[in-house]
Length: 346
Length: 88
Image (cartoon, rainbow over all chains, first blue to last red; front, side, top):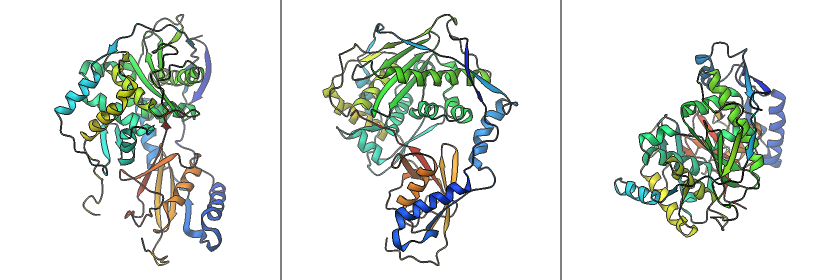
């Protein structure tokens, strides 16, 4: 099942598709009707289609061209991944000290709370995560839902502040949008642009935060690459719903393997005859969450534990509001985002 | 905020960028962003309200206008998809 080729995706030839002019006119009509009503000024907003590809297209294209001279004609061979779900729970190593580790880190740092400032967290690979005031109020609010900016920002902040070099070398932390891009069929150049900075091909663990759009639920998958194991975590301790996630994760994995190979990076795994299997990082029907707002915080706690080399945490639902505060303070130890241009004005 | 519609004011071009794809939108400085958001979301094929729009690191509000934010001709607006989860 590993060796069979199920699909072939052509690499992008000329960057991004441009939209048709007719579409823009259609859009304008509906916009005009929607917003302007009777006293319409149709000229209020118009969409311009550039003749030549935009600058940003070139940046993405470079990523491929720089490494692969024949990218325009080559076809990426995607392997057919099948992930078999098992119910056996692996031996769990409990991270009993992560709260203490954050407290200790905070006591050694100056944090400067300011509700009106966007913070910037730059990861070890130079990728930027911005968390603005609205995101921070979600993180801090005891019953607020977390968005992707909270998840990616805090996870990156943990990676930047709490980990040893050994920890960092072990894990590739994916962005919550990486899986989304596969679900929505982004092309290979964009996938590679976002994934390459993690240097995932050299890391034994890949951490994939999963956003279930239909349920508005955060869960987590962790891939132990060489062992061909996928571990999955849901704060509600439910196995339901994972089938669909594994389909998407399998697609993402096949892209990651093919992209790494296309760029000359070899990833070692167990023999092709060994199937991929998935195991829960929770005991079925022993949920950690009973409310309807903390799944993102649970995912962040698990991400922290796994980044630190453990596989579970020993906290209770009652601890979550305090942990939200700790995560918020952690973000406040990172610098304010400074505007690039005309910084002195306004 | 008390900008009267001055037709003398030249329109400006905004470069709206989502995940490497960009679209140019030409607007008046006093056009509310609600309208620009809707146009961009529709153009990028996303549901209304799923984008966060950022100018120089700051989130843009629906009621803001390019004029309010000192946005100049050719400036870039970044769109990010917002994923929200808690459990419902």
